[in-house]
Length: 81
Image (cartoon, rainbow, N blue to C red; front, top):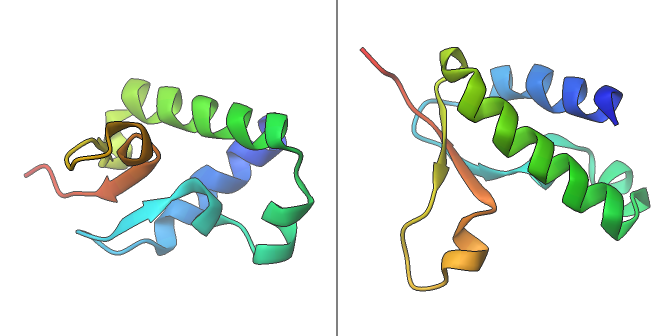
């Protein structure tokens, strides 16, 4: 699972400031589709915890909107100046 988390972290460098994304966007479509539901849940959980601990990535969890459960899966790259 750590390999998948490492892949996600490396891919965040291609996300533009202000861009909203989901963890699945950090994978090629076929790679994400080949993961089991449990693996997908785990990588999302690990990624969310990783960005909370490592604020230097400038990524926040987007939790606005009507559907809070769905919004917890979205992230945004910001610039903390």
